[in-house]
Image 1 (spheres, rainbow over the protein chains, first blue to last red):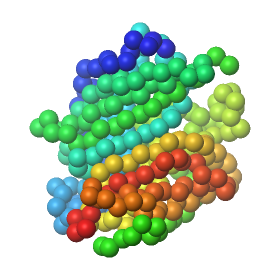
Image 2 (cartoon, each protein chain N blue to C red; image 1 turned 180 degrees about the vertical axis):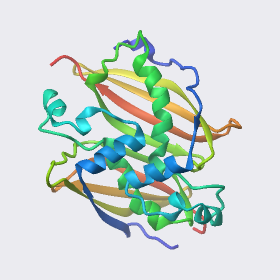
Image 3 (cartoon, each protein chain N blue to C red; image 1 turned 180 degrees about the horizontal axis):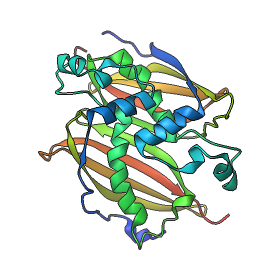
Image 4 (cartoon, each protein chain N blue to C red; image 1 turned 30 degrees about the vertical axis):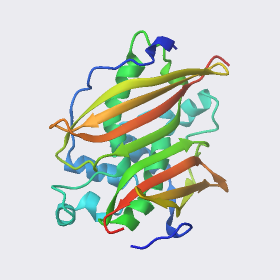
Length: 146
Length: 135
């Protein structure tokens, strides 16, 4: 892949509107039983305006920005060779239904190791007011020819 | 909520089936066919269908979420994907999660997760940082 990607900042991805039923669907899929994920009344009682998304729901929004990286014509990333190495989320607050979120990706590192390429990206996810919600950091390993 | 380093705060066991993977694919939008088609998985050198790494990461934090309730919030969550979780078409896969207090400092509590399938850990450096409301 293209080493000159390091440091590139992509344009903000299209905004993502977090829906209540999507939060419930995702929560069921990760085996959540937390009332905060399913019941608006429980979320309200805890100080949230609507149901709270599970911690890893941020990946759905991050994905919109990763798609930009993986499809960049000059990136040279063969998606069929991509393996997920590491994942991290750093939160300012939980994602809540009703949030309109925008992810903006920066390629923080591109390395070569034993014929493989390793690309680390930070997707900064902000809400409609521009306030930081969560940063999602992925390290992807692009396997070389075997 | 007083906690001490070494305390086990939560543990749980999850039985993944192919249905779980299809459900997660739909919920997350990750439709990579290696998570639901054995023929595609085998064409890239795998024995068969694997769980999404993000599904394993997603369920592994749930015992902490449920222990925490509304008494605090998660400020950071990271994992390394060290070993895949194959999900057998008939018997599925059983994943266990043990959540233990790894450190306590001014920023809050670090919970270390041990996530195991078939006797081996599948996530490395799986750490959840938690800020307790009444710490």
